[in-house]
Image 1 (cartoon, rainbow, N blue to C red):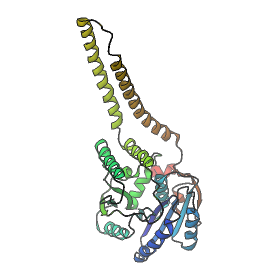
Image 2 (image 1 turned 180 degrees about the vertical axis):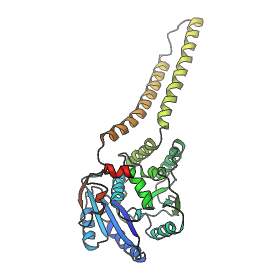
Image 3 (image 1 turned 60 degrees about the horizontal axis):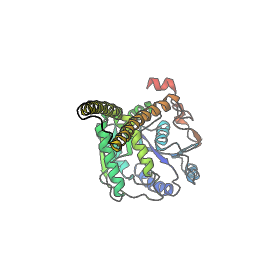
Image 4 (image 1 turned 90 degrees about the vertical axis):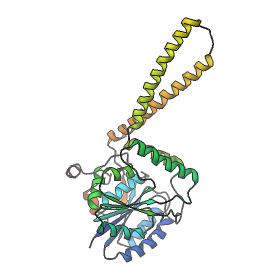
Length: 332
């Protein structure tokens, strides 16, 4: 009997959790030849999410939960779930049912039949999503795939099922600034992709504002590409070359035609342009420097405030502060 762990990050999902659990009961009944466990990770919710998953844990021993001391973000919640998962197969899915639960059976079958370590999902379309959001998402994937050697599949979801050896590889990358879509690709292993039609949330509202998505995209670009740093260098060299040509032009013009006092608006515009480019390049360097600064602090990825009574088998791998045991991490 194989054990399948399903990690469910939750942030203010009080309304969605009961609907999700009802659907998952059907799936777990159809997959009853396996031992199933649902690992809910409360990412510092401010509504009744924690009490809801507490109730589920008391009612169904297949449900476990871990609650953070504050909101650390979905990436931290996924890492915490992976750290405490005990299954031979580990899946990650959203609680809002935008990740169809029925695909879990197909994922498991493919992992059994195919020579692969991961079955991941991607949206076949973005129907029902605002056009501006879809355009920006598509643009992000185009940009990052041009900049990074780690290919990110357009429309890829965090919804996937992995074998234990791939999970261990992902956990070995215990970096503070996390972009899991890139990490899943970077560790390698053969991945089979499943497409599905975009669906609406079963309850509640999305927690991903445009600002959060923009920050997340920057995390991905800076985490898996140094192209912006190269761009800053290229821009700097280009403007130095242009400045040198302009100096030669001004010296030649002054020598031939004299030095008329004119053109100060143009001069001001050039100064503003060059200053803006300098600040832009400095900002790129600062973005990478800030990531390095945060990594060198060695702060924990998450801090646990509470966990279910039966949870504990994963405590050999991580402590309540989301830090891997050094010796075990070295062995991995």
